[in-house]
Length: 436
Image: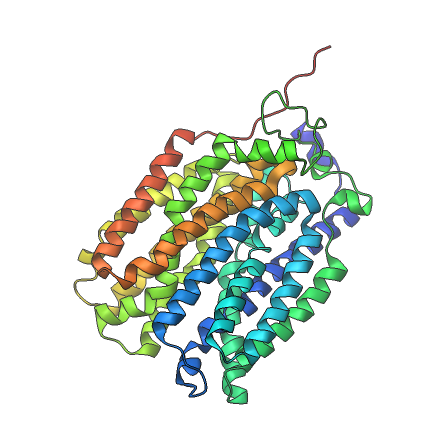
């Protein structure tokens, strides 16, 4: 079958749509970071504004409210992405995020910041699960490792670009409010592109399903499941995803995995300053090596899962996580010399080894095991559990030492690896043979 498939020429129209969807969904999720990073970038100027009564502690509470809303939204919008389709959920959420961004830009009252950043958390959570499902409908299982490897660079690159746009806008207009206005305006342009270029499935433009196009069987939620027996996004399909053991396992893994990423994203510059005594600029630059390594780790892990392990996702995750745990347990010894090069290398290695499994656990694998019937629900469930864990990543470094934080999260990473180890060879179920 595979030799025959290689002789069949690709459909130019199908390939055009595939890469159009890839591009516009990549841009859409990267674009969500425009309105997500505004508050983080503007914090210093907001604190210095004499017209606003707010403290760092209040900002911490507001951030926690945002993260809570984001976690809740993952569950809600994940299910909604299957029931109502990516297009409706993302267009609604992105437009609401733009409106909330403008409102935050004109706000001067603490209560409004809290309320609208909570709403912004709900808006931001409309992006990941439905968009991840969208990509899965256009790329088959045997190529998803590579496809998601490239696609998941959106949240590393999006965050870096969004911070630059917000910061430059505030400096150019000499007013922190433009850190909200300009990014929201740019995101509106992306919203228009998404409205014009995006479609949910190949069938929506008169093309066959990706499984039919590539000659692959349609994965099912259970071995006895008939792929045509339940409507995509139906209550029955959603319920099956919510009780699927592999999806639940991935959720537990992501709960232990995501805190490390958020701890370094939110506290990395301070970690560097405490260890090396460097200034704000140098500390930010050194800590940025963590995010810079992200796309490389994502791509390597994606290609390895497809090419080295035959579309099995767990082996590369387990290998990366065991190495990551060992490095984090050794971080205190490695940085005792207070070397800038060693600190930079350490953060780069952590980013490389963390972002790869991160993308597979929260994107590729939930789509594989959630199947087309419940991909968005599966991704939302996994990311929801991870987002609950992320709250720990934001809170714990504020109360305990850096050394203890790294030991705690190294243990979390080890638990994640051990949870995946028994599923080394796990792949989605195939349809049950039809009786003659």
